[in-house]
Image (cartoon, rainbow, N blue to C red; front, top):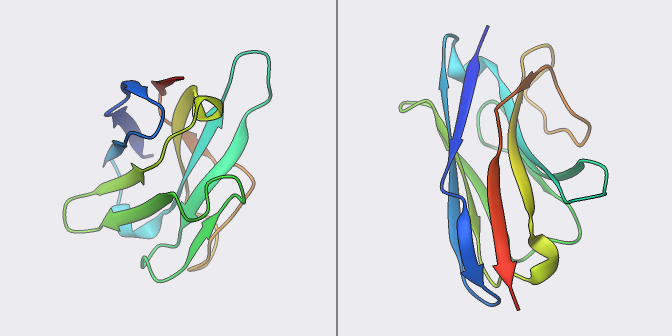
Length: 124
């Protein structure tokens, strides 16, 4: 069973950038499709981005397309989310997510494993 730990959250002004990281342990990292979800106060958790096991396929929510970039390094057991041109509406707790039951594909609904989350706050 894989364990996931996020890092890199913080406070940033609108228009700024942050890079989130997710470190995985306890499993074969390249066996997991990975993704990011976020949850703002009073709202449901929503899909942000996902990446296939090989890294060859990517998927983004419309709200972040063109601003966020998901990537992974299977040699280092890490996944990242580069967030540029941040907006106040990007403020949320960001969660790393992983799933091993599927092929080398992306996904938009949550899979089996979650990290503890990291707070991202964008001030206007």
